[in-house]
Length: 412
Image (cartoon, rainbow, N blue to C red; front, top):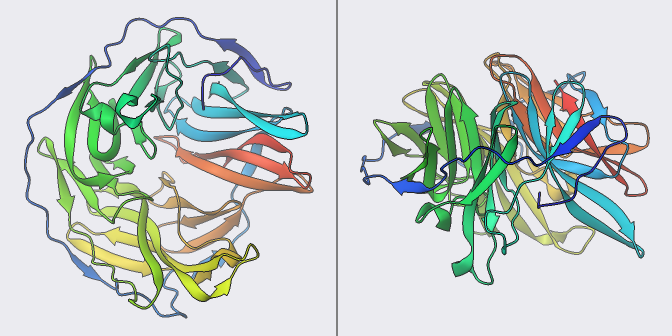
């Protein structure tokens, strides 16, 4: 996820390339600040659920996931984007034991062609400034984008950058103000769908015009993006107050979300809207959860136990309906839903744990374990749906009992 040397995986990496791309204008320009009144929306079932509540009633299922590839070398893959032509783009981190310590290094960006990976370096947007990658989007094997921060000695000197893959290589440039103050920093989300490319973070969004990045103000902080059937939605993500908004009439309009009032007598109550899946204008799912710290119970590290309920929030075109999962805790390894992706058939997949994915087929929820080699534990970091298909991919790593990680790719 940071600039790194070329790596060759024993089994499938086809090569390493960093050929210069054709010039791409990546500066952002401001747009007039269109003001749209928030869209009022009713809600049902969104009061904090009781201890025994479980609207989702998920059943264990024979897993729909299979292992496509496991790296021979040590490392892991983090971000993932899938293009309609079947190309996958992912970030890679290598691992190596040095002087008794485990050292992780950025291994660049990889592209999967169905048979193997090719590794690329991302050039620095500002040669004197280190950078990292926090978001990735892809339109094809020949067109992809990554976003990240170009670090400075202080926040004032740090700026978001975007790198574009075209002409067989990558070209990176800083984003312009004011987008550079937010987009590309931690918790940025990016997506490319049907010729449109967007990235959001905080109160800023940028879209690609084909020649430059255009800045759009957001009515609330956003950290996750979803698109489907011509609709674009953004939600607050895992680190901001709950909010949802959609793109309409050339601006982003906030869609009022339920108040989500957790009990007043709990420690550090928190409501998270982690991700959004857009199936159609009147069929949008937002996933996340509500959590709090238990004052009287502690985990194995003597920290207060975190408890909560996962949440699946549905938009029907007029209002929201809340569907709560069972009471969980950090002892049970899941307290909220994470990243979600469409399944291409009117449903969705969502990360519920490092080795557990939940599926909604449009009617019922099921739980699916991610496979791993004997004696190893899977750790899923990202999901990506291949548009126009029923294929959903996951990347992460499989970890042996000795703590050795190997990058892995799965498909449902």
